[in-house]
Image (cartoon, rainbow, N blue to C red; front, side, top):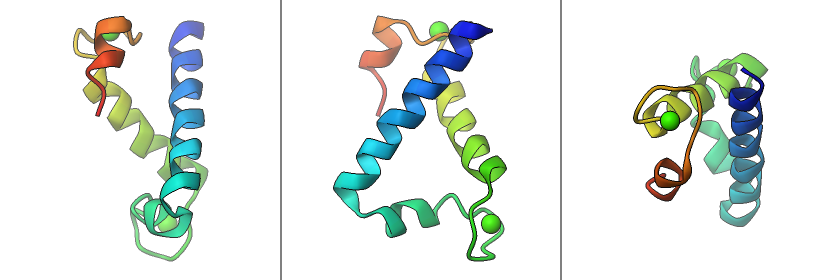
Length: 72
Ligand SMILES: [Ca+2]
Ligand SMILES: [Ca+2]
């Protein structure tokens, strides 16, 4: 579980770095799932959890090197 949380934290950090390079507002607006103009922590976490599930091909809760290399 700790490894999964650490992995999710790394994804979030990488995502924040990505936001700085590609325009924060436009990029972050896609996390506003109910389109109320605000992004809750839950909306943000849910969006990233879906991305993590997609990348975790074998569903073990960890992104190994081959899974990390195939992340898009
Ligand atoms: Ca919202
Ligand atoms: Ca995995």
